[in-house]
Length: 269
Image 1: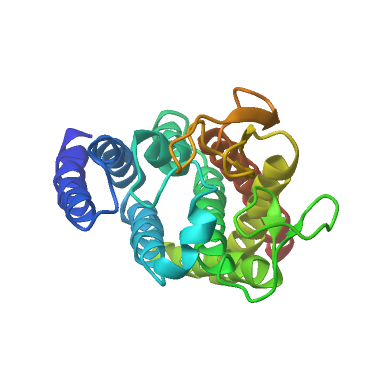
Image 2 (image 1 turned 135 degrees about the vertical axis):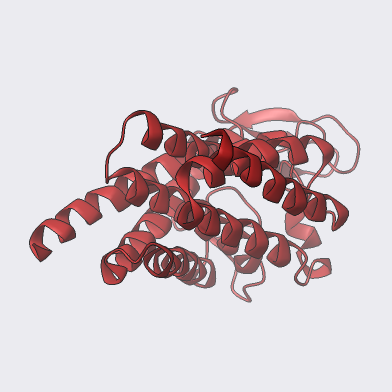
């Protein structure tokens, strides 16, 4: 196992250093990326590592895409595009745990679960980074009410379509990398990514902690708004921040993917 972890650590170090240099990771984010990358690459193998790499590279590139046009939406988000330890663990921690469990409790179902986890965080990130550029305003998932761009729980046609593409892309990559039932992995990734991303929006629209800035008269995920003024709780559970929402959503995406995998793989026999 050590022989697998050492090259995984070295590769993760190189990728994390590049991410830090390009402004995609903070110092604490580098530590999180090292932990997640080493466990995923070292214990899961190359197919697992490739999916994690696709998520990190694509999300980093998209975070800088038309960055100026996304500033208005960014002020609502809890954190910026420079990912910290919490974000690294929220997006990749469950995948790393699954990689560890695949070694401790071997099962062919861990990989499709991992596909759903990575498909969800990819789909959600793509939807956030590109959906905020939609010309049509988003609508709250629960009520259909038009809301400001960047509002937690707000969805758009563009964002939903992009989240489907993100999950599908991970599913296709998983099939090519593992050479396991490419059609089924593609569907598992697409379904897991889309439904996991929508569950993220559902939590954001209902129970995620949201604050309000009385100075700017705007809602936000931040305890201190970008204007520098402290915010007050507006709605949601005090302990449920955006990082935990991402974590729970990726778990749901994993369940969707592994359930679909079992269903389709069983019929294909």
